[in-house]
Length: 564
Image 1 (tube, rainbow, N blue to C red):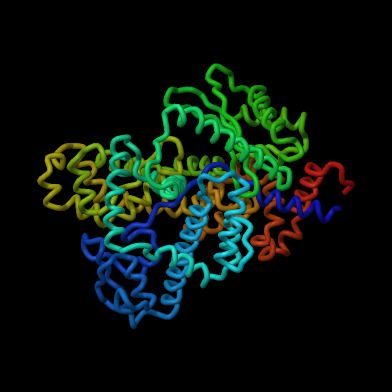
Image 2 (image 1 turned 180 degrees about the vertical axis):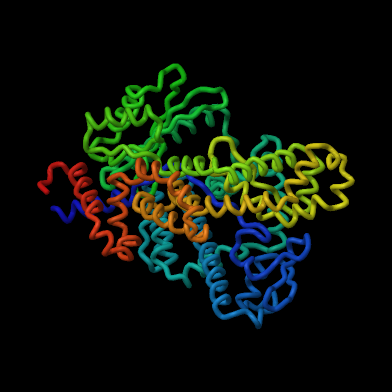
């Protein structure tokens, strides 16, 4: 009984998650793709890359350059001077990319195979089983089983088979072009964003129309707004109920957040996270209400009743005083449920504190003035895009971590921006003779400005790594937060040259929020139960009794019926 409880404790803590999601910046020429370490862009042409080993200029951009480094023949000549370790690394990148593409195509293949029309559920299941039994000797239960049961070679054959032309290629191409004219015309007239064409439901719609054939009667406005919508609502409710049933097995975290919409209404949301998935549970217009501790407690308490108290591990909110007061009310009524401060919000506040350091503050303010000047004037923006072939990451107003991305974006374009502000094109621009234009040019030419940016990036980078883990949605972060913060502190020391005068003031700024919000029972228990951190520091963790105490406390709260 005790061993099962420990297993459940491990699973639930490691599955606990923070809020939201932050994506790293996308790769761009000379940017974040790791293969840019081995080549450089030629002039302003983004399609030409010069190899650092072979001194050869290749056309086709970074994709063909990777084939050159990996020794792939066909599209370009292989590099004969690339080191073996680099060649192996790039080959692995290409293989992983191909595997990812094949998996994506296989998922789309399975997605489209789910589209059936004119059949009830019983006929559909019979049809599916007959089709699969006749097409393969594998026993397939669901759409993902066909993917899991086959070898990579078989998956590649299925994907390749799906690409084979079913009619004369020229005739098929002409028919597709005619169809696309009508599809695109509807996009243009209705003002539909183009990226919606990548939605899986759009591909399923096209598949269903194709299966129906000609003379499909268009849906009526009433059907879209009433009949079909109600069916979607019913299906969504069933998805939510199924999600609640998974919470019974895996436990869950309830996350609550308050925000204001475009009409300045105060909206409070409840989102439930369990087993790597998140589900929106409810939303409430709280514009006319006072957001005191009692109000927040009642709002969260109602959500707990919906999920079931026994299935809730923790409540996740930001560290506002009213939320902390509400946590005390919850502890009185439901002592077995944890109330945790959002790790992403805590790290973001750490960055905000650090940004008050004078060199970092100056870098942010000057960087913001440069960004605002460029994007508020047509000519400087046109010149910037001409010289850099890209855009700056502009600072946001709500999440302070965007300051890091903004400074990093400026640093990535340092060379091109300096060239721009000493070019004849800038000199000929009337803005170059205005006070604000001269000020921006002086900032770009200042070594002090770039030194401040370098210092800010050294300080920010370790914490931003923690923020991305805490604010991500790929894996549960609870088991990593404590260890990631310890690693971030060590990385900060190394980045600042192990100079105590430089890193001690920063560590002192981090310490209060770390101790208060990220050293709680769940964080220490997650650190103890995470093999990634436990085994390298086995002796230290075992000798420090606080981690085992955290395990025992978690056991008492989650399983109060056990006699430990």
